[in-house]
Image 1 (cartoon, one colour):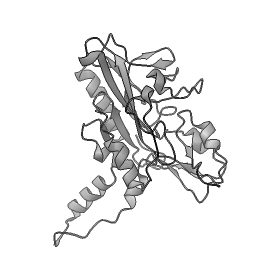
Image 2 (cartoon, one colour; image 1 turned 90 degrees about the horizontal axis):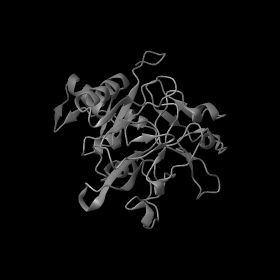
Image 3 (cartoon, rainbow, N blue to C red; image 1 turned 120 degrees about the horizontal axis):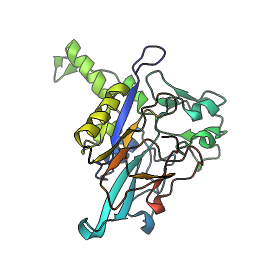
Image 4 (cartoon, rainbow, N blue to C red; image 1 turned 90 degrees about the vertical axis):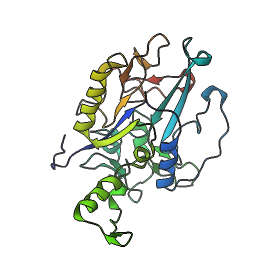
Length: 279
């Protein structure tokens, strides 16, 4: 898929059936964006999820869920999911922003310019996933959100490696690898893949075809106008809620964390997500 300017749209394929809950993506995001840690405490209902929610200091969050499963060791099945900006193809946050501080780039990322932000927080109301968060510990709170590491494209390519000049091919390879989001590069479980959106959708379809017993035959995120860029693999869906069924191992490719119709908040205590009724 290409944008109106002919630029290839990039996307991240998120397959949470492979996620091991190591938090490597969460740590890598903090490191790349130079974000401080948060003062947190263990919440029994959330298990090892820490912190509780996305914030100005946490742009990527791994949620933790313990679900009853008699067939699993200890009678529990563990499910980990990744929460961050989904970089919609038609982002509501950018549409609501009166100063164009939020803008969707031709290659996909929804980026943020703090210099243009007036702190109105319209984007927080507009985003159905509850992603933009305010800097509540300042007197003039502005917004923070994942930018899909769009700034990694600005890195300077080195001229040499170990005293040997890089070839043109090596230069190109460096640029391509440097542009990969920090979370994707850090994932040790192959749960995250980054590339052109069409390629990621094809990869999702291939995984479904190879493992029909593991996934529901539907790729969430494939609709071009109303779906986010990310293609995601999450738990079983029922009505307006998404959850893991203890009686099945099939997992649909899912796309969002909050309801587009009811704007229900994320409910980690219920071990589920409010699913869009328009999937």
